[in-house]
Image (cartoon, rainbow, N blue to C red; front, side):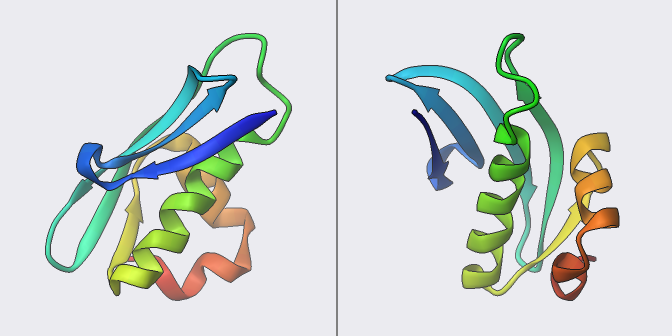
Length: 91
């Protein structure tokens, strides 16, 4: 089972498979927005929705923090483009 964890101290959401890090989505924070700048999942884990879960975890925590997101990472941008439920938080 792959666990996705928000790691505020490292400005990222990370995916772990039995304790082994297998992916991450990182962001650069400011007072009013977070810029998602990188999303990567190791080879062999593609097609499982893990990258989408990483972005969703950042979105959930940004909402809690009351900040908007600017999705610069190509994957995050594609997620924001196809998910209407992210429109409220998009910068």
